[in-house]
Image (tube, rainbow over all chains, first blue to last red; front, top):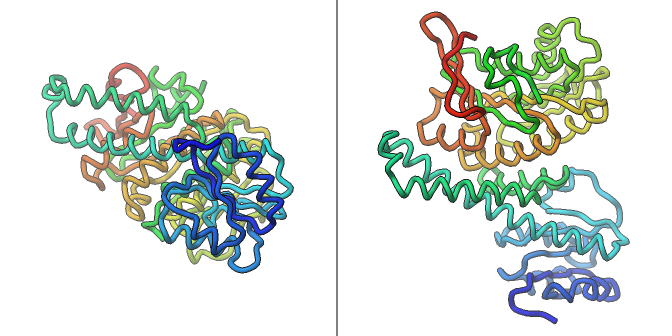
Length: 194
Length: 222
């Protein structure tokens, strides 16, 4: 049931039954990869993976260690941590994009994956928006008001900026709830100030 | 709607939509911070929640000054995110505060995630206390710009504005227009719905509003 355009979800889970359950829920809409431990998870991870469901408590490499390596590789994927207990916001400071506490219901899992994909869209739009705003500012500081009024390039830029603003306000995945807000900020914080 | 016209006498700010974010820009020592705090204080006098995010003053100083400013207000609901808490021991700590006051300390103005968590916790507390409407002031973006770059600050402002929008609050953010190049100012402005420019005019401090109505307002005395 997979096609090449479907988003890719990687399940890293040491209990085969649990992994297979997640797979059943997701396989209709996503290309699913399954890894039985942290090392295998890192092997099966590449640029095509959009979302990783990462069990925190596994023999061998722990979820935290796997996350650290994923971030080191600077892949653009989103990571949802699967825990036995519900953690506080502070867990988000560790670099996870979302968390799920066991046992997970199917709607919950699907919602989380969708939300993470939406957030990727939001970040991409925000990045594009910023690039255009920089361009606009360059023109505004270099040219007079009269020159800007006559510039087709400037008019087009303003239209594209307005379109992106609409797109961003429709993609509220970044800030739908508090955890979203924090992870959206984390995303923009980038790696520069660490 | 939020009415800011008692602080800034112009029709342009008499009906500010919930979720609006406004940049207050001007040279150093032109009263940007005081204008921002007065906008919050006016809200507190009408039972709005108030949230101050500061990169320069300690939570203790902010709380003291704010209490003086809104003297006589009962049931004050004030959240403070102190972003320069590095090495500042004692005084008001997380969770150790009187009713109606919510303080969160963050290690540095560059710790945007920490600031975000602080804002979230304060907004939750203010909402929990019944402050459905409220006003946030961030003072100042100039300091944040020295800790991170303008891309990060731009995106932060954008995301934070969306969060305030979801909460139905309004936000005012100050920036020292003399401390940054034109490109930076132009970029940062774009993250906001409106702009209040302040300056020292010949007859004293003046301000004008842009972006909230068609065309800029005239300069008016502050």
